[in-house]
Image (tube, rainbow, N blue to C red; front, side, top):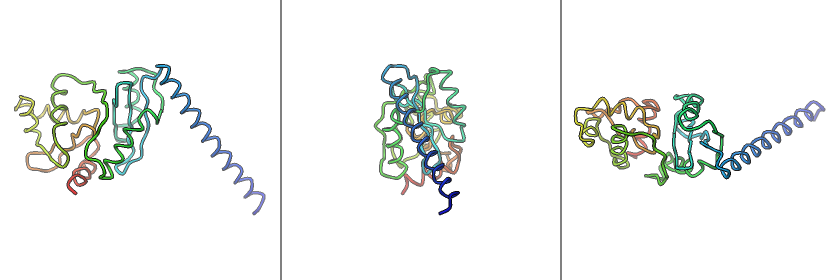
Length: 202
């Protein structure tokens, strides 16, 4: 081994050590802020088979699941504007949710047992409530969901509510398909929707 190799190894070890120290400090800061009631939203970016997911929670429950195509920085800015500016990356705050999402995406879980902080009202809330009634592996059309809400002509509004679902996967808007059975659009992208439907059909 040359002296250059030795220097490279030392730099790599130092970089790794600094990264570990920073991660530890960040985790301690987030835990202290949460204990002190100073954390509005804790979040983490979770690697999954369908891409990176932002999972965020308040003290009441999971408040947001966002696909990478939604722009995680933009999602965090929206959370800061609507909930509060004290937002930290705090993996412990969303560890249970992240674990259940991982189990679901690996086909080992068919439902979620998580407190949700759902901040929608009116017709959107009715639609999301109806979505929670669609069982694993089942699908419903937009028209069927509109009928369940008591507004059978509000098919387009159902589509809008699905597209603005703040908790995809946990509230299964991917189980709503077109009347002809084709998947239709999806917040996470058409390929992700097809993958989720295939996962649940396996």
